[in-house]
Length: 256
Image (tube, rainbow, N blue to C red; front, side, top):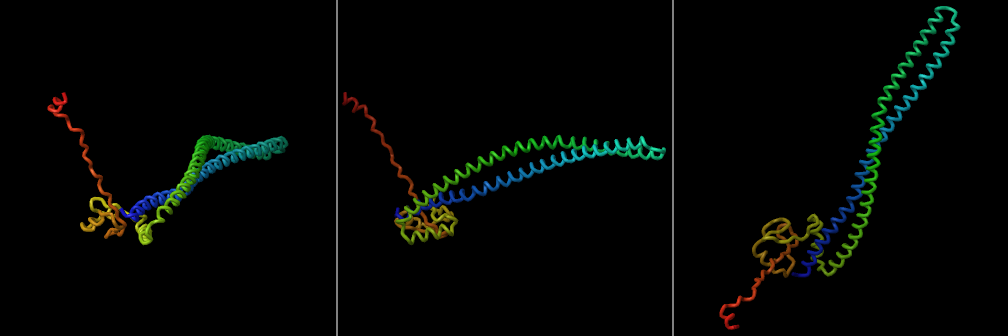
């Protein structure tokens, strides 16, 4: 096989590994951004639950204040009732006291409603907070793995690029230019193996004479359909294993 063809085959392998590592390095930040986005949405959900519970508690405190206000008003009205001069004044104080007591009952009912609402809110918040804490730990663990993987990928990339520079150095410039052109225009696949008389990339059957010339492996040849560099791997030579000949009865007798 001509040296340029051997080089092209190794280059194709190196370029494929380099491309895979580069894709992985590029995809890891996107993966981290995606899981952080999901985490952020869960944080907002927990914060909303906290806000709902805090609002519930504020409303209950305000209702307690309203009850105290009404109770203080009732106390003043009862003092004033004792000083009433006429039945009309007494009835007016009584009516206002009844109104304040009704307001207190409304506040108490509202407090009970808020308490009933707060219990499931607290349970939901506890579960959501526990799940969020676990998710944060998982995200941090994934980020650590991603950082370590990125560092390792970059180390391997440096080694592969160094090896590529060594491999490509002796390649004929014309073949190198064509290889690079094909790599750019053929989605990174510049070279293909011929299998059963077909191009392994475009799957088109090669002309018989072309195939015969290719099998000699004495020149760089290009697919007449897709233009890729072609190579052919001859089948392994089968060697018959012949064991030692069995001794004939005559020889065994002679031996005696």
